[in-house]
Image (cartoon, rainbow, N blue to C red):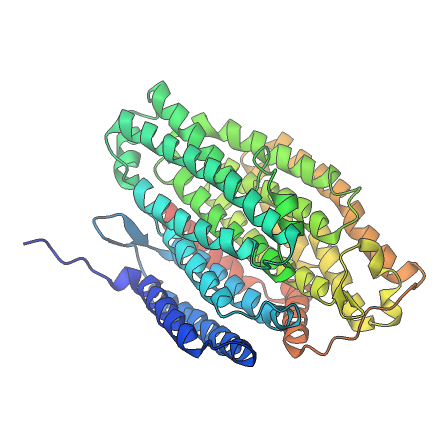
Length: 488
């Protein structure tokens, strides 16, 4: 008789899956057309946020040691707990800020929140994957949901184009990842992370050329998911074309989950082969920082600018992975926490950009905004300073820990390149501040009466502005998460 697996480590995922399917049925029975669609959307959105918050509590209860289950294909440890909390928080905030947008643009359909729940479920499975097979299942569950959300605004050609581009390129990336996994399996005889790590340790970091090729293909697939160069080509078009709340969601939760998966795969099964993949990660990191710094300078659409900014930030985070040490991984986790709050805050500001009831996306539309929206201008300025890495805002500390870990690992060239890229990128962040405060007001933006946007913007702005006052909880939690990854 087969042994019954311990389901406790996977309890948050099982809870989220059950809730998503229950809400799907609830939405179907509530949907009768017209005003009832909006009511069903509101109800499902509210229940989805509650479910995500309850999932955070469930995840927090598993913050002890390393808990493997399902034939060691799924593992819950402190690293997984930390990253899952970030993903759940990002998903909940994305639903909150999309609340009014969906109704104003006739997109208030209950499926939106449920798709985010399924995508979040896939991300949590990715983060806890301890096998190349479970990794792929979680990745595809997330990706299929994201393809649909990207084209959720069906009447908008830009949105459908964004969804199609994301689907085609995402399928190519998934194929590369699957091909890399099959190569690794073919040359090692296993897909389990623990067995792969033991195998490479036993051979003292020496392996066949076939495994190296497999790792390269896996790196390519993962680089697509974090929108790192040279697999970034989908990012600007999808960010611009997708509805703004969807873009906000794309920029945080899936990126954090993909970065966590990147870390787990490279440090876990392939940690003994760091010499084989480190130079590839260094190249990807430097190329992403350079492209993110220079390509955004001439952008006029703020969502495209944030897309290139996102590529640059992926490059900074990959510095910590290239370091390959516990301190490097800790710095990445700190950076991801700060990045989550900064990005959600900026996209909340973008959602305020409305004129005569319509969304505007041109950066010049922000000109003179401080005269009509002084508090919004202040919040946007704080967030832009933080994105640029200017002290004493949170973004400075995120980059500081990343660069320090690179210097400690004697990767001086990478650290210097990161600092120089950050200086170049500061130009387009500060240009937005200059437009807000020092350009003449041509036509004022609408006054927004959305309380959920004000609450999220206030919370993210305060976090970014006063992170330096008491950073200990995030620093200590990130240290514990990194330590558990290396202890495992």
